[in-house]
Image (cartoon, rainbow, N blue to C red):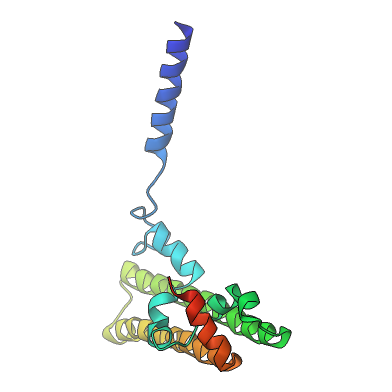
Amino acid sequence: MYKTLLITLLAGIGLNVAQAQTDSAITPSSIKTLTLKQYADYQKGPTLESMALPATMNRYPMPDDVLRYKKELKLTPEQVTKVTAISKYLQLKKTEIGQSVLRNEKKLDDMFRSQKLDEGSITFYANRYGLYEGEYRTSVLLACYNTYNVLNPQQTTKFWQLKKP
């Protein structure tokens, strides 16, 4: 009897905890227009994959991918240093641009909430998104280009052989 009561009690607690947890994909963040998940994603910065497609589809590798295969590619210490620097710079740009998007989104939210806006302000802050996306895409594509230039032709060929699924 105590066992049944204990199981029932624990099941009830588990159900309450599950109901109390929020879904970050739909729960608003401190910026009304973003969910908690979107906010967290912007804090980390935008994803790389789609931004890199023109480069990667034409065999210009992402720096982090090259670093994963550094032993197999027999990268020299100098090459590892160069590709690591490219990767770190790209990560810095990713975070920086994500933070800029958050500040911009907050400004738009504040302007509409306070009703202190005009067409010029809306245009200015809305157009910033294109600038941020362009800056980030440039950083990603340059990272691929610069990584490609660090490798010799044999390493590039070997990389794409290793990368194939």
